[in-house]
Image 1 (cartoon, rainbow, N blue to C red):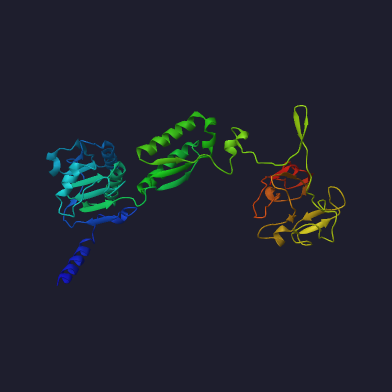
Image 2 (cartoon, rainbow, N blue to C red):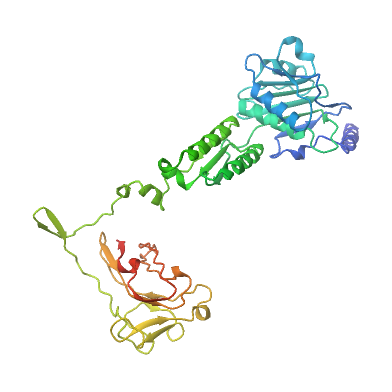
Length: 418
């Protein structure tokens, strides 16, 4: 019989929710605990109410957020007042951080007993308790209080036909203490500051508490104009007022040109061992050691369109050809064409050579190139791969689409270190 009575009660409760104005689905992320109290009356702010602040820790800024929201909605703001014991039965909004006054009011509620402390609901947690005549919001810390206020405002005037906030209780705290998002931008552009604030407000309303702010100019900040610092200050203050931590992206690893622009000597030197020098007076002159030779490096030896001495050359006779008419020196060059036809996926036209080298040694490689209607300009490249497949040489040759024989800057002295 008890089971039957409970079932009927739940069905009745479901029917009562059909015209609900308080919609927990509006809350993102969803709170850990939220339930309704089934009362016929609803709460709505009006000019006769107050916002009561704990006299021991008055959170005027939280009251300001509520009144700013009411002004935005075209509603009357609420007078702010420090709480006194005689106010416990007054109508209005009661705010506190681990507030003893709010906890005393909560203790008189017939719901399950709870007390807001530093441990409950926990860091950045809050209790939101709504009755038709008053709202209680208490946080375990300041961040929790503001999250509770945000929850309150998400439920107020949520639809054009909103007619009141139904009695309910919400207990919530974030699941993870670190909730950051990545925001790359250019702080020097004024419009980006406005868009950043808009984005950050959305993130805060989703309970994110840190922004990983990235701007390439952070590593050259000493060279930026005054307005750059003004924009950074504006963003810093905006985030601070909303308890959003800024984590700047600094000290880039890998592509470190911005750091090296201050002083190229900041780059770590690569070790070279066993290098010989000739000392003359006070000057040491390096003695090159040639222990690597590129066999058939001039492409003079060939059998038709095949060239001996190489690990492989892409598609001889289709994509690569021995050219005895157009050459830089000697009698032959290698010509690549028909990339789209024979290498449609990658556009490869490669010459691969394999040789043994000595560790802790710097090597130079160079070559002559002639182009005709080559696209894109970055097609030319010299790669030096290790046994593990790592690229040991980095360059940007940018050979013109059409150019006569040239030993390009990158081709002339392409260094790599082993």
